[in-house]
Length: 187
Image (cartoon, rainbow, N blue to C red; front, top):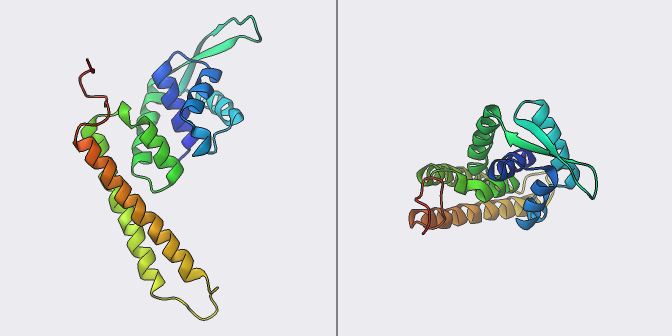
């Protein structure tokens, strides 16, 4: 999955119509540069590629007194479908960058849908942890690097923490925290 595609589609969806610099600025307010490999060039490349693929539509150009005009973008039906697929995939992912993008955009989905996906993600995290713990029992093996067992323990601990963290966010969602797509607007 491409995290940058998800983030560009998601921010465009939230702000449409929008332009590249506004997408970049929004991602900077999320501090996405600290938890992803999002770079300015990758944002503009994704906008161009998604437009070429028919996921985004360029709907015009705003003039600018300080430089070249800004092309405005909006999601197409195909872009909305890809956004939903990528977001669902991100919320069940055990990859930190993908999961982070999913969490950043989860409020665009219905609460029960997100809870279900995060429970799946927790199962995957637990499964990976258990597989790593089982592998550790086989170490040290002849000819293996002596630190292999320590790495397995590190990774197992990471996935254990991810599973426990997921329990916490699911609990907060169950308790009604966060404004989700299917919630009544806050008064």
